Length: 614
Image (cartoon, rainbow, N blue to C red; front, side):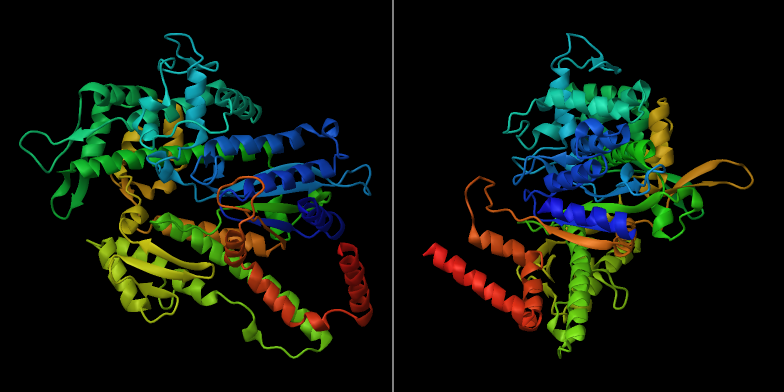
């Protein structure tokens, strides 16, 4: 039972003072998010006597952080109305009572690490899906406001909000789905989200900046581009109708000049050897890509800002000390953390891109850790019982991990980074190189009828990836010109976002030694893959420093309806998550793992059960 898993983790921290991690996995709609809530709620109540009335303010705040993260990071998909579109590792921090050392420890804080926010969802979704919940909650709240009001749930904005609806915005209407089937009151959800963010210390000024930026993102999506007369290689924002009005409204909300933003979209500055700085036009397609890139990244830094403020409000800041074994005397009553990991399960769709490769590589590493834990447990058991065994009998996906992220030979992701650094590098060329380097690898195969596609035979099963746009996505196309434009905003909040999260965009700011002038340029070594693998390495280090508890969420049927058990679907999920392989390993020594008395007792119980059934 999930409470039994949570109890075991709690006792590991309490009685043995050993860090714990509960790893929750499963496909979309299997119940990972709800299971995570159960674990966190149990741990919050465990030291509070089991009743909500006895919970401390910080214990309540830890639980209140969940709906805020859901509003910002969850969305409706074809499989699930409340699908987490990011991964999170929440470190729950505990402390003993100074007065009564024998009492159960209390939850005193939490620190949330987030991974792989699906920013691409901001600018487009599949038919029947939605963007992040917060946008629709804003629209539902706006519908309550009086005609001409510039306030949204009491927060002042520089924009009339009463006439806004999801159909008003290209980023929300393109999927032809703007409501939830469950009929949840999203205006009420918005009020709850806003109240929770205030509880974490966000001021009205910051909330105004956040909501203005989110509304600005939606208006950005309405801006279209056309070719200026006499120059088919250039572009300019359309000034007529919805596009022109939306450009003005977006700039007003973000505190930037329309001309400055238009130039950053439609032109690019380059440092040419011997010629100084030159300006080149962007095509209509590149201008649209630049617009979408700004929307994606702006939402990403808003998300990171809010997560940072939540951590500042409720984190004790002691997790690192315990992880490194450097707890001080001042922290003598502080215990190691219980980490709860809720992250995407293995994914495969009709068309799979870079996002799915990242997600599936994450699952490969988690599966590798699972295999290692099972291997160590069984090896110790066999050794203790004197059983002869062959290590080759145990499942191992190390070769797959090395093929995707290894250095020698270069893996798929390192080769992608190399292609991004190559002048004129593109996805088709990268895919051809993959086939030359990994073509003989049994975990890799080319697709004859689709030469730009390739298949990775993951531990969970084969997935075909379409390499188109891999290089572009990995390069992170937010230009230095756009970063400079956003830093010139009259909104101190927007300026702060782009200064604090500068590295997110792969840019760096240098100061000329003689003139003192500042210059923004792209950091040569930055790629999305590099940042992702760095985060993943940090995550695995944290997990490996703790005792693991694995929770496998199984979806009983693909339709998410009650009372139906689909055998084929369930077996596939058990295979994807390595459960069947773990059972096979355990079964090899099962006849030697129990004493004669236990076997006799089990046989007797079985006979009585069988007779009762007759």
